[in-house]
Image (cartoon, rainbow, N blue to C red; front, side):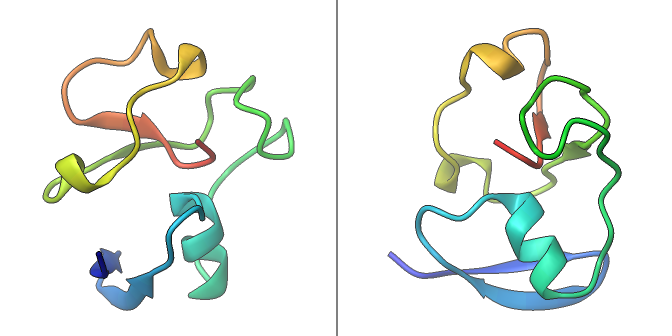
Amino acid sequence: MSVNLTINGAAIEAAVGRSLFDHAETLGIQVPTSCQKQGKCKECIVEVVAGIECLTPRGEDESHLKDRFRLACR
């Protein structure tokens, strides 16, 4: 299934298996991180405003997050 992803107004076709963080980097959007995308620093929290059903299920690294919030690196 192909979906379009919009981050801060910039659009890209989302590729299966790539994180939101990876897609943001492709668009030239910097997402804060100090753990190098390991899910440990929790700096890359994003709010998913639409299409959350297209994302993979939450992992252990995201168990503390509620509602529509996810880690971009996961």
